[in-house]
Each structure stands twice: as C-alpha cells, then as structure tokens.
Length: 144
Ligand SMILES: Nc1ncnc2c1ncn2[C@@H]1O[C@H](COP(=O)(O)OP(=O)(O)O)[C@@H](O)[C@H]1O
Ligand SMILES: [Mg+2]
Image 1 (spheres, rainbow, N blue to C red):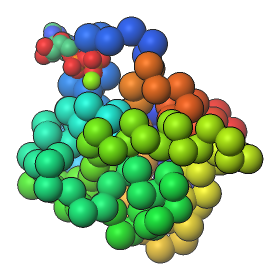
Image 2: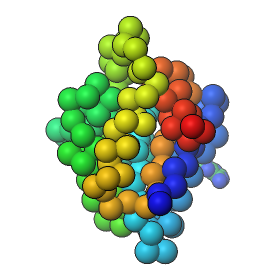
Image 3: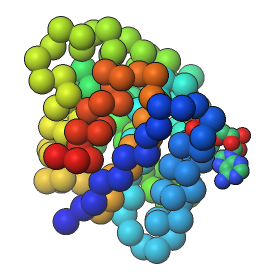
Image 4: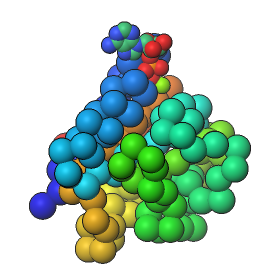
C-alpha cells in the first residue's frame, strides 16, 4: 500500500521545494517507487527535477481540471522518481475550480485511479501555501 506525504507550509522560503526534491530522490535510492506531484505554479520542484516547466504538454493543472490522468502527466526523471510537473498554468486551476463541487477531492480521485495502475509506492505533494484552493486538496489527501 502506498503512502502519501504532503509537504506544505504557509510561509515561503522555508524549504518545501528543497525538501520535496531531496526526499523524493533519497527514497527513490532505497528502491521505493516514488512519485513527486508538484502543486506549485512556480514549478520549482519541476525545474529542480530537471524538467523544463516551459515545455510541458501535460501537468498537474490538467489533472486537477480532469483533462488528464496522472498516468498521462507523469514523467520519469533522472533522479529515479516519477514527477507530475507544474507551471504557471496551475494558477488558473484555482479560479476554474472555485465553483466546482468537491474540488478538494480532485487530487484524491486522481490518485485513487493512479493507485490501481501506478507503480509508485509513495506519493509526495509539494504545495504552495498561497494557492489555497490547490494546496487544500493536498492536505485532504494526506489526512483523509
Ligand atoms: N535545510 C536547508 N538548509 C539551508 N538552506 C536551505 C535548506 N532548505 C532549503 N534551503 C534554501 O532556502 C531557500 C528556500 O528554499 P525552498 O525549498 O525554495 O523553499 P520553499 O519551497 O518553501 O519556498 C533556498 O535558497 C534553499 O536553497
Ligand atoms: Mg518552493
């Protein structure tokens, strides 16, 4: 059974991105199957994983608005984990999901279908505090 870890903090510059990337890479070295989900429109975890955020065809944004499944968005990175990348488009999800019922369940539902087919043991979310509509689902994922 996979485990999910949410890395989130209201404050910027406290090491969320750094922790996410290093934890993902470290756990991947222990032969665990790891998926890092970038939920920050800044896309720093994406860039830090060696993926150019300006060249994404599918990202966390498409997953949250149900235009793609996690399996379609994930990218195997050199550090040995899978990344669901993000970029500035993700800012739009906050607005687009504002009136959507059960928006807090979007990521959970996406991950549920992922669990049936995906190879990761541990999901990891990197959350940006300022983006509440987006980061809150990650909290729900972790604690529900
Ligand atoms: N454990 C640490 N010790 C010292 N500096 C750190 C540590 N973790 C992160 N940093 C530095 O702090 C800054 C902010 O880190 P970052 O991971 O981008 O924070 P956040 O994602 O929370 O905004 C970066 O310059 C990073 O290199
Ligand atoms: Mg960051």
